[in-house]
Image 1 (cartoon, rainbow, N blue to C red):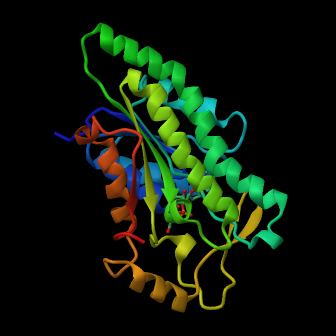
Image 2 (image 1 turned 90 degrees about the vertical axis):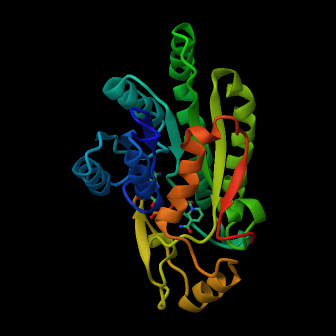
Length: 274
Ligand SMILES: NC(=O)c1ccc[n+]([C@@H]2O[C@H](COP(=O)([O-])OP(=O)(O)OC[C@H]3O[C@@H](n4cnc5c(N)ncnc54)[C@H](O)[C@@H]3O)[C@@H](O)[C@H]2O)c1
Protein backbone atom coordinates (compact mmCIF):
# COMPACT_ATOMS: atom_id res chain seq x y z
CA UNK A 1 0.00 0.00 0.00
CA UNK A 2 1.34 3.42 -0.97
CA UNK A 3 0.30 6.62 0.72
CA UNK A 4 -0.86 8.04 -2.61
CA UNK A 5 -2.51 4.96 -4.10
CA UNK A 6 -4.74 5.93 -7.02
CA UNK A 7 -4.10 9.68 -6.65
CA UNK A 8 -3.74 11.66 -9.87
CA UNK A 9 -0.71 13.94 -9.84
CA UNK A 10 0.18 16.58 -12.44
CA UNK A 11 3.78 17.83 -12.45
CA UNK A 12 5.00 20.54 -14.81
CA UNK A 13 8.61 20.48 -16.04
CA UNK A 14 8.95 16.81 -15.10
CA UNK A 15 11.03 15.70 -18.09
CA UNK A 16 14.21 16.19 -16.09
CA UNK A 17 15.77 17.41 -12.89
CA UNK A 18 13.67 18.04 -9.80
CA UNK A 19 10.34 17.60 -11.62
CA UNK A 20 11.30 14.11 -12.76
CA UNK A 21 12.39 13.17 -9.23
CA UNK A 22 9.05 14.48 -7.88
CA UNK A 23 7.15 12.36 -10.40
CA UNK A 24 9.18 9.27 -9.46
CA UNK A 25 8.63 9.85 -5.74
CA UNK A 26 4.87 10.38 -6.07
CA UNK A 27 4.62 7.28 -8.30
CA UNK A 28 6.60 5.23 -5.77
CA UNK A 29 3.76 5.94 -3.33
CA UNK A 30 1.12 4.85 -5.84
CA UNK A 31 0.21 8.05 -7.72
CA UNK A 32 -0.72 8.12 -11.40
CA UNK A 33 1.10 10.87 -13.27
CA UNK A 34 0.56 13.51 -15.91
CA UNK A 35 4.06 14.46 -17.07
CA UNK A 36 4.72 17.78 -18.77
CA UNK A 37 7.80 19.26 -20.35
CA UNK A 38 8.64 21.84 -22.94
CA UNK A 39 10.88 19.24 -24.57
CA UNK A 40 9.10 16.18 -25.96
CA UNK A 41 11.90 13.60 -25.62
CA UNK A 42 12.57 14.08 -21.90
CA UNK A 43 8.81 14.08 -21.21
CA UNK A 44 8.39 10.75 -23.00
CA UNK A 45 11.52 9.36 -21.29
CA UNK A 46 10.01 10.14 -17.88
CA UNK A 47 6.75 8.46 -18.89
CA UNK A 48 8.69 5.36 -19.99
CA UNK A 49 10.71 5.33 -16.76
CA UNK A 50 7.52 5.52 -14.71
CA UNK A 51 5.84 2.76 -16.71
CA UNK A 52 8.94 0.55 -16.33
CA UNK A 53 8.52 1.01 -12.59
CA UNK A 54 4.90 -0.13 -12.82
CA UNK A 55 3.26 3.31 -12.60
CA UNK A 56 0.55 4.80 -14.82
CA UNK A 57 1.78 7.88 -16.67
CA UNK A 58 0.80 10.02 -19.62
CA UNK A 59 2.62 12.93 -21.25
CA UNK A 60 1.26 16.40 -21.97
CA UNK A 61 4.10 18.02 -23.89
CA UNK A 62 4.21 21.78 -24.25
CA UNK A 63 5.24 25.16 -22.99
CA UNK A 64 3.46 26.08 -19.76
CA UNK A 65 3.35 29.69 -20.96
CA UNK A 66 1.24 28.89 -24.05
CA UNK A 67 -2.23 30.44 -23.59
CA UNK A 68 -4.00 27.12 -24.27
CA UNK A 69 -1.67 25.01 -22.15
CA UNK A 70 -3.55 25.08 -18.85
CA UNK A 71 -6.80 23.75 -20.34
CA UNK A 72 -4.89 21.07 -22.25
CA UNK A 73 -2.96 19.97 -19.16
CA UNK A 74 -6.02 19.77 -16.91
CA UNK A 75 -8.14 18.05 -19.54
CA UNK A 76 -5.39 15.44 -20.10
CA UNK A 77 -5.75 14.46 -16.43
CA UNK A 78 -9.55 14.46 -16.52
CA UNK A 79 -9.73 12.53 -19.80
CA UNK A 80 -7.11 9.95 -18.81
CA UNK A 81 -7.84 9.43 -15.13
CA UNK A 82 -11.14 11.26 -14.42
CA UNK A 83 -9.56 13.06 -11.48
CA UNK A 84 -7.07 15.58 -10.12
CA UNK A 85 -5.52 15.16 -6.67
CA UNK A 86 -2.11 16.82 -6.77
CA UNK A 87 -0.72 19.66 -8.90
CA UNK A 88 2.96 20.56 -8.64
CA UNK A 89 3.90 23.81 -10.41
CA UNK A 90 7.58 23.07 -10.98
CA UNK A 91 8.50 24.06 -14.58
CA UNK A 92 10.99 26.87 -14.64
CA UNK A 93 14.41 28.24 -15.40
CA UNK A 94 16.52 31.28 -14.71
CA UNK A 95 17.51 34.03 -17.16
CA UNK A 96 19.81 36.24 -15.15
CA UNK A 97 21.21 39.74 -15.48
CA UNK A 98 21.71 42.75 -13.28
CA UNK A 99 18.86 45.24 -13.51
CA UNK A 100 20.61 47.65 -15.89
CA UNK A 101 21.08 44.85 -18.42
CA UNK A 102 17.76 43.07 -17.95
CA UNK A 103 15.43 43.48 -20.93
CA UNK A 104 11.62 43.57 -20.87
CA UNK A 105 11.74 40.24 -22.71
CA UNK A 106 13.81 38.68 -19.91
CA UNK A 107 11.49 40.11 -17.26
CA UNK A 108 8.26 38.93 -18.90
CA UNK A 109 9.59 35.48 -19.88
CA UNK A 110 10.43 34.64 -16.27
CA UNK A 111 7.27 36.17 -14.77
CA UNK A 112 5.17 34.30 -17.38
CA UNK A 113 6.78 30.95 -16.70
CA UNK A 114 6.90 31.05 -12.91
CA UNK A 115 3.77 33.08 -12.09
CA UNK A 116 1.30 33.43 -14.95
CA UNK A 117 1.49 29.76 -15.95
CA UNK A 118 0.72 28.40 -12.43
CA UNK A 119 -2.09 30.98 -12.11
CA UNK A 120 -3.67 29.75 -15.35
CA UNK A 121 -3.21 26.07 -14.46
CA UNK A 122 -4.86 26.53 -11.07
CA UNK A 123 -7.68 28.60 -12.57
CA UNK A 124 -8.33 25.89 -15.17
CA UNK A 125 -8.34 23.25 -12.42
CA UNK A 126 -10.96 25.08 -10.35
CA UNK A 127 -14.23 23.80 -11.89
CA UNK A 128 -12.97 20.21 -11.79
CA UNK A 129 -11.71 20.44 -8.22
CA UNK A 130 -15.01 22.02 -7.17
CA UNK A 131 -17.03 19.23 -8.84
CA UNK A 132 -14.75 16.47 -7.51
CA UNK A 133 -15.00 17.91 -4.00
CA UNK A 134 -18.81 18.13 -4.26
CA UNK A 135 -18.96 14.48 -5.38
CA UNK A 136 -16.69 13.41 -2.48
CA UNK A 137 -18.86 15.28 -0.01
CA UNK A 138 -22.02 13.76 -1.43
CA UNK A 139 -20.50 10.28 -1.08
CA UNK A 140 -19.27 11.00 2.46
CA UNK A 141 -15.58 10.80 1.45
CA UNK A 142 -13.10 13.02 3.28
CA UNK A 143 -10.58 13.74 0.49
CA UNK A 144 -7.83 16.35 0.58
CA UNK A 145 -6.29 17.64 -2.62
CA UNK A 146 -2.79 19.14 -2.82
CA UNK A 147 -1.22 22.06 -4.64
CA UNK A 148 2.54 22.49 -4.31
CA UNK A 149 4.07 25.58 -5.89
CA UNK A 150 7.83 25.67 -6.34
CA UNK A 151 9.72 28.71 -5.13
CA UNK A 152 13.37 29.35 -4.33
CA UNK A 153 15.55 30.86 -1.66
CA UNK A 154 15.96 33.64 -4.27
CA UNK A 155 12.25 34.32 -3.74
CA UNK A 156 12.62 34.27 0.03
CA UNK A 157 15.79 36.37 0.29
CA UNK A 158 16.31 38.01 -3.11
CA UNK A 159 19.40 37.34 -5.21
CA UNK A 160 21.66 39.73 -7.11
CA UNK A 161 21.32 39.29 -10.87
CA UNK A 162 17.91 37.67 -10.48
CA UNK A 163 15.43 40.53 -10.17
CA UNK A 164 13.02 38.75 -12.53
CA UNK A 165 13.40 35.32 -10.93
CA UNK A 166 13.43 36.57 -7.32
CA UNK A 167 10.25 38.58 -8.01
CA UNK A 168 8.51 35.65 -9.69
CA UNK A 169 9.49 33.21 -6.97
CA UNK A 170 8.32 35.66 -4.27
CA UNK A 171 5.06 36.03 -6.24
CA UNK A 172 4.55 32.27 -6.09
CA UNK A 173 4.53 32.56 -2.29
CA UNK A 174 1.80 35.24 -2.43
CA UNK A 175 -0.17 33.07 -4.83
CA UNK A 176 0.12 30.11 -2.43
CA UNK A 177 -1.10 32.11 0.56
CA UNK A 178 -4.01 33.69 -1.36
CA UNK A 179 -5.21 30.41 -2.84
CA UNK A 180 -4.96 28.57 0.49
CA UNK A 181 -7.61 31.02 1.74
CA UNK A 182 -9.84 30.53 -1.33
CA UNK A 183 -9.62 26.74 -1.56
CA UNK A 184 -9.68 25.68 2.10
CA UNK A 185 -13.44 25.21 1.75
CA UNK A 186 -12.72 22.68 -1.02
CA UNK A 187 -10.36 20.68 1.23
CA UNK A 188 -7.34 21.71 -0.85
CA UNK A 189 -3.98 22.17 0.88
CA UNK A 190 -2.02 24.85 -0.99
CA UNK A 191 1.64 25.02 -0.01
CA UNK A 192 4.98 26.08 -1.36
CA UNK A 193 8.48 24.59 -1.35
CA UNK A 194 11.45 26.94 -1.75
CA UNK A 195 14.58 25.13 -2.87
CA UNK A 196 18.11 26.19 -2.13
CA UNK A 197 20.99 24.86 -4.20
CA UNK A 198 19.89 21.61 -5.83
CA UNK A 199 22.20 19.84 -8.28
CA UNK A 200 20.57 19.86 -11.72
CA UNK A 201 21.62 21.06 -15.17
CA UNK A 202 20.74 24.59 -14.02
CA UNK A 203 23.41 24.56 -11.31
CA UNK A 204 26.03 22.30 -12.88
CA UNK A 205 29.69 23.27 -12.31
CA UNK A 206 30.76 25.23 -15.39
CA UNK A 207 34.37 26.36 -15.36
CA UNK A 208 34.44 28.15 -18.72
CA UNK A 209 31.07 29.87 -18.27
CA UNK A 210 29.75 28.85 -21.70
CA UNK A 211 27.07 26.31 -20.79
CA UNK A 212 23.63 27.02 -22.20
CA UNK A 213 20.31 25.24 -22.59
CA UNK A 214 17.71 25.97 -25.21
CA UNK A 215 14.41 27.21 -23.76
CA UNK A 216 11.68 28.43 -26.08
CA UNK A 217 14.29 28.76 -28.84
CA UNK A 218 16.56 30.97 -26.74
CA UNK A 219 20.02 29.94 -25.57
CA UNK A 220 19.89 30.50 -21.84
CA UNK A 221 23.09 30.56 -19.79
CA UNK A 222 23.19 27.88 -17.09
CA UNK A 223 25.80 26.55 -14.70
CA UNK A 224 27.78 28.06 -11.87
CA UNK A 225 31.48 28.78 -11.56
CA UNK A 226 32.99 25.81 -9.60
CA UNK A 227 34.57 28.10 -6.94
CA UNK A 228 31.24 29.86 -6.35
CA UNK A 229 29.51 26.49 -6.20
CA UNK A 230 32.00 25.26 -3.59
CA UNK A 231 31.62 28.35 -1.41
CA UNK A 232 27.81 28.20 -1.76
CA UNK A 233 27.89 24.59 -0.53
CA UNK A 234 30.10 25.59 2.41
CA UNK A 235 27.52 28.17 3.52
CA UNK A 236 24.79 25.50 3.66
CA UNK A 237 24.37 24.26 7.23
CA UNK A 238 24.24 20.62 6.07
CA UNK A 239 27.45 21.27 4.09
CA UNK A 240 26.30 20.27 0.61
CA UNK A 241 23.91 21.10 -2.19
CA UNK A 242 20.80 18.95 -2.42
CA UNK A 243 20.08 16.06 -4.75
CA UNK A 244 16.92 15.97 -6.83
CA UNK A 245 15.69 13.24 -4.45
CA UNK A 246 16.22 15.59 -1.48
CA UNK A 247 14.13 18.18 -3.33
CA UNK A 248 11.39 15.68 -4.18
CA UNK A 249 11.21 14.59 -0.54
CA UNK A 250 10.25 18.12 0.49
CA UNK A 251 7.48 18.25 -2.10
CA UNK A 252 6.23 14.81 -1.08
CA UNK A 253 5.69 16.02 2.51
CA UNK A 254 3.05 18.43 1.20
CA UNK A 255 1.43 15.72 -0.95
CA UNK A 256 1.14 13.16 1.83
CA UNK A 257 -1.91 12.66 4.06
CA UNK A 258 0.18 13.85 7.03
CA UNK A 259 -0.10 17.41 5.65
CA UNK A 260 -3.91 17.41 5.50
CA UNK A 261 -4.15 20.19 8.12
CA UNK A 262 -1.28 22.30 6.74
CA UNK A 263 -2.03 25.02 4.20
CA UNK A 264 -0.65 28.36 3.03
CA UNK A 265 2.87 27.45 4.20
CA UNK A 266 6.33 27.73 2.70
CA UNK A 267 9.14 25.36 3.62
CA UNK A 268 12.72 25.86 2.52
CA UNK A 269 14.33 22.66 1.30
CA UNK A 270 17.78 24.10 1.40
CA UNK A 271 19.92 22.12 3.83
CA UNK A 272 19.20 24.61 6.62
CA UNK A 273 18.55 28.33 7.00
CA UNK A 274 20.30 30.47 4.37
N1 LIG B 1 18.15 23.60 -9.14
C1 LIG B 1 18.09 24.50 -8.19
O1 LIG B 1 19.07 24.78 -7.48
C2 LIG B 1 16.79 25.23 -7.91
C3 LIG B 1 16.74 26.09 -6.81
C4 LIG B 1 15.56 26.75 -6.52
C5 LIG B 1 14.44 26.55 -7.30
N2 LIG B 1 14.51 25.72 -8.37
C6 LIG B 1 13.29 25.57 -9.18
O2 LIG B 1 13.00 24.20 -9.33
C7 LIG B 1 12.29 24.00 -10.55
C8 LIG B 1 12.94 22.88 -11.36
O3 LIG B 1 14.27 23.28 -11.73
P1 LIG B 1 15.44 22.24 -12.06
O4 LIG B 1 16.64 22.70 -11.33
O5 LIG B 1 14.95 20.85 -11.90
O6 LIG B 1 15.68 22.57 -13.61
P2 LIG B 1 15.88 21.58 -14.86
O7 LIG B 1 16.26 22.45 -15.98
O8 LIG B 1 16.76 20.44 -14.49
O9 LIG B 1 14.41 21.00 -15.08
C9 LIG B 1 13.34 21.87 -15.37
C10 LIG B 1 12.48 21.27 -16.44
O10 LIG B 1 11.43 22.21 -16.72
C11 LIG B 1 11.27 22.32 -18.12
N3 LIG B 1 10.75 23.64 -18.47
C12 LIG B 1 11.39 24.84 -18.38
N4 LIG B 1 10.60 25.81 -18.83
C13 LIG B 1 9.43 25.23 -19.20
C14 LIG B 1 8.23 25.70 -19.76
N5 LIG B 1 8.09 27.00 -20.05
N6 LIG B 1 7.24 24.82 -20.01
C15 LIG B 1 7.38 23.50 -19.74
N7 LIG B 1 8.52 22.99 -19.22
C16 LIG B 1 9.52 23.84 -18.97
C17 LIG B 1 12.66 22.10 -18.71
O11 LIG B 1 12.59 21.67 -20.07
C18 LIG B 1 13.23 21.05 -17.76
O12 LIG B 1 13.05 19.74 -18.23
C19 LIG B 1 12.25 25.36 -11.26
O13 LIG B 1 11.04 26.01 -10.97
C20 LIG B 1 13.40 26.09 -10.60
O14 LIG B 1 13.24 27.49 -10.66
C21 LIG B 1 15.65 25.04 -8.69
